[in-house]
Image (spheres, rainbow, N blue to C red):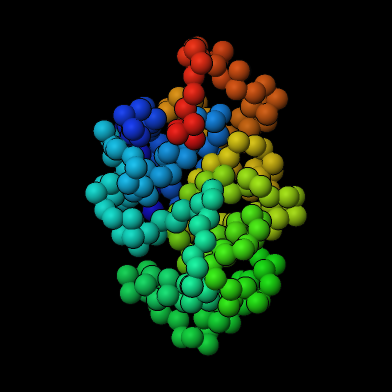
Length: 263
């Protein structure tokens, strides 16, 4: 799968957040997207998946040459895209087991995978839960209801292990995780890593990238990708901070700038 983001602009409440994003992502690659609060990282993930609060004013998001911006969100998912939420929602009344069984059935109906018999599905689910160090009793709990932050994030990766998307966008999956939970989440992502899987990891910090080594690193500032590089760019950013980016690329700060909506 090849994702091409071309000159993407997007607003929320008449405020421009994305200001011409150009980015190419392929399966078989792990990309990291970093940047300060308000730079538009989470907005980019929301726009790719069709969040209705955002208005796209220009640009395209092509998946294998097809513009997905006019597709409903579920059709984007059927093409093999997956979004791991920064704040996974609770779904009362739907158990983890029922949710994942139905999701895999829908995936199979889209031709993305062969259907699984119930017995083989339960076996695969239990093995994946054991791998992600999730208590088996969670199968019968309502999805994310009463889960801790770490349990919710591990549940996101469990979904990835079962659905096997071609490309995942992980929006600050590391936020709120202690070091043990972070290692488990990273273990799950690394288990998927290969020619048929790619990911864009949105993060503020180096620590998750110590466990999931990116092939490419992109720095976002004021709604644009200002520079890209390899893993050494993370080390430089950690040492010098975002002031280095502003100085390096001549970016001027606006007085009293606040852009909470563009996180």
